[in-house]
Image (cartoon, rainbow, N blue to C red; front, side, top):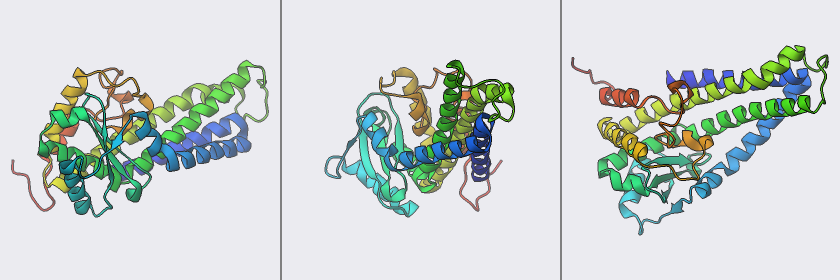
Length: 290
């Protein structure tokens, strides 16, 4: 169900991007939208992992430096049948974790120092299983594409806004099929719609990664316990000043949670819903007793 929802949302997001280009400049505008999205996706595919790891000052650790952490990641990678990801530790007291990398062969998992201090071994392993789930499900690639499509829509809207403000377009410009109305929709409605769709995709992928973690651990309880602690920990510790809203969707718990508006504008599902699903999770073939 989550996979189908993601495909549907990605198609919708693509439609918003292409539609924005059409509103701005007809067929030529559509080509420009495709071109911008393609360039941004190419850059995100190849370099986003290095940029994010550098942004948060993540340090790669060897098996000698963090033997237990490496052993857990190696065991989960074996269960998931993927190559062993690189292992990083992020400085900072806010407990959190994320995964990055363009594919399973080039993946990395990162946990903060605060997470290692707060959680017990089973909970840490469950969090790592969630991040391995993102790698296995190629959520990083999906999230990158969604973010760049949404970014392309915002870029096009900004270009149109500045062009209009500087007098570069007239209200009867024939390149815009809907004239002034089309320009207004492209500038205001399209970026907002793209943002909402991107966040919906992110929430769907979080549920899927939680489910994958439960399968890898053969139980959802350790992750449910970890999420409860992480939600509390994130609320108690201010995020690092490097934390950007654009990367909040990558973390297992939104590092900026409690600072947003409504769940509609959240990159993560409600914590209560995630925990409830995990506590109710049962291996396939087992029937939950009333």
